[in-house]
Image (cartoon, rainbow, N blue to C red):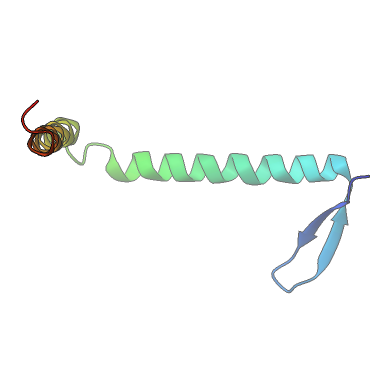
Length: 81
């Protein structure tokens, strides 16, 4: 037994939805949210870092330094083995 899907409005009203209507509403909400976020992000950051150092390279070098520090600590704890 499955419960009917419900949509709650901003005013707190509850609307029961048929399975087909629920699928349509869900598809609209998910697709629109992803498209807006992606398009907005691309639009706001496109070209923002052109000609500047690669943030990816900086993050990778920081991570490599972190790993080196962790390995040094582990070697100290295990007596240099």
